[in-house]
Image 1 (cartoon, rainbow, N blue to C red):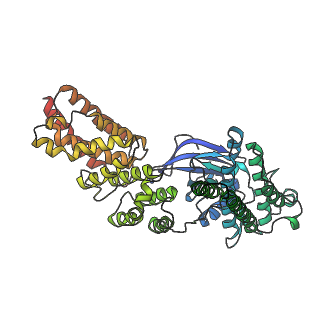
Image 2 (image 1 turned 90 degrees about the horizontal axis):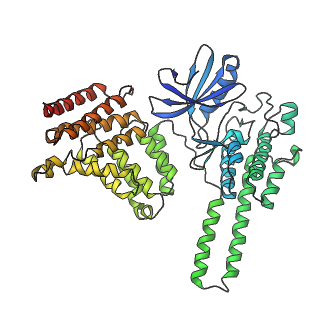
Image 3 (image 1 turned 30 degrees about the horizontal axis):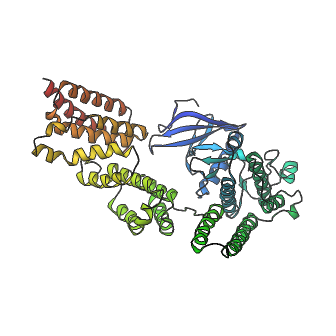
Length: 500
């Protein structure tokens, strides 16, 4: 496989992401779903191992395990297509960056949740090769377990793992079970603390020391036992903090005590075990329902909000039913959201939903959609929302501008459309680029008769040419190239009429 190859008329290979002894991993663009994906290529000589990995991934539904999307067979290899996690593996992070104790605590609890999920599967799945290099720390600081090449069902066969992380029974005899993963977990955590340069808490040290006991009888029997030990440590820390606070209240004013309680609570929350919310839905509607339930419990979870919006956009239509579902989460909590740090991001995502996905998506010149989008774009301080606000205002005010004799101003600030097109291009989503192109062309063709100078006509022509180039290789079920060409021809006719 080479950079630039198109696999199965769907996946365009963009770069190599990693290479191992038996396989190579590539980053690619899924031209159907309009997302980045990872392609793991394994030679046919190791096809059974690749098929086992695909089978296990296909059965896993956990928020910190990449989803399998597709399997492609070629004459020479097996290709597993799965979610691409943007970030760095922990071996590189440890070498180049210093992880904070808070980050390490978060990673520990997330990896524990993944292992607990795998070991609780029927039959249990043994990961068999846990190490920093197989954990990706994403850009939003979440830890994902990748590369299930060594994973297997318990009692399947022998696996030797990686030297330095494999337990004695695995390293010597290839024997693996739940306690093997516990040993590798302990070794991985020690490695994270060692590279961080931070002093490890004595209680955490004792937990990890028990994880890596060479004698299996002295090691934790289950990953749930390890998790319970961490949770009990958190509870003890909480009780100790509360006792300290009670003592401090004897010498502090009530207002100072209340402030201290708030600060302590914030610290504890940052290291508390993360509640695992495993998504089990088999389609976007089911998964959206689960995210909605999670958001009703915690409306300030930006990861769940973005995941919900992702599911709504998966069919490129934000329906009225989905709109009402989203309102049921936002409106009862709007004051809390407005005061939170995530409101800017939520408002921008909502604006994008209405601008590109809502209602009749074949009628892009829809004032109702634009009006709703404008409300949310006005709620965010994101700089990139400014172009949407300007174009939206121009479209919504166009009729009054004509009545007031200011129609010439509609295309005067043509750079607004240019900025909007750049944002669509930067999204990397050909459907957004297509819909943005239709909206811009529709506006120009409506008011092309108001072009006031040769310079304006030239700018319009430049935009039309850019739109042609950007959409030249568009390939998606939601892109109607015939409609686009029809609108381009109409717009060019209007512009040529002015020039002639």
